[in-house]
Length: 399
Image 1 (spheres, rainbow, N blue to C red):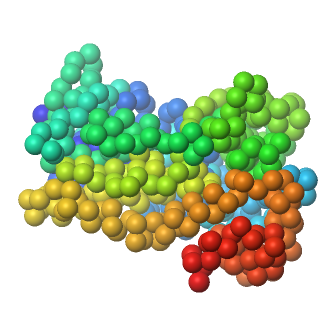
Image 2: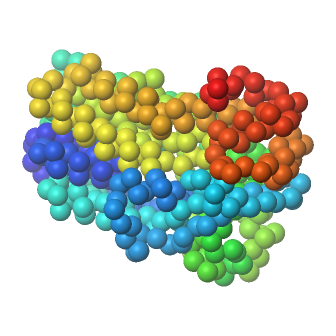
């Protein structure tokens, strides 16, 4: 491990990998620090991504990255009624269920092949901050501690985001905006292989949802996310999940169990500081409705490295110079979607099951050529303003 790089990336997920790869392709030296002993494991994700979104980064999708191709999404309302979203309607809910153990590893390999360095089982235990600038990190690796300096540090260390806190950034997520999640990788279960399934309702997943993401003919990620405020003794995410599995997949076999959290809050007030850029889940860029964050991490990681390269070329990596990153993602399609979806989430989490049934039954009868969150809300407001009277504050997002 060298003592100095142009860019030091904390975290070896998709955001960190794209950041490092983009940095070295821009002529910089870069190093990835990953606390886990293996890239991509353990998986902490339902692994879904839209086909159109992943194609922004790769001309071809490697078949080994893909566990299943998703053609449709199915929504199940609290009253048990259900409907399908076909490919024209389902937008980014169709695409792929990835195998993150292969996908994440390949992204890091691509970064290393391009010239980046990578250290696993290496932990950033403190930030080096001098004269108001983040100038690197203290790394614990192989039983030793190293000071590794960099012109720009990119924090891509996920929802825990310890490194940002070391740098003095408040990354606290309110309990009501932290989804507590549990997921089983299951086999020997009857599923529709090309269909992702979502259950909503306060009895099955209070202020959240249950998902089934196929991983093959009779295998799937079966998981749940509920609001942190709804989690209590006997009613934790795993308790709800166990109840669902017992009722629906009594013969199923559990291969893996994943427990974790997903932020569904607004992004950090500012995602840069002197010498620091925060990306992906660390910047609270996961989708407030779905909790999805693979695309958001890759987009922000790549953008962060591009901005870092420009600033380093200009010999200025101050907060003001790095603000181009913050301003660009906020003005992008991603930033606007996060803002809109947060407002929608704030309304939907307070709806009771009767309201959810009314809304979803209405959706089932919509005749829309193209489905998206935006067209959904527009149509709901037009067809049933009484059901969605609380959504009138969202009109500015759809005018």
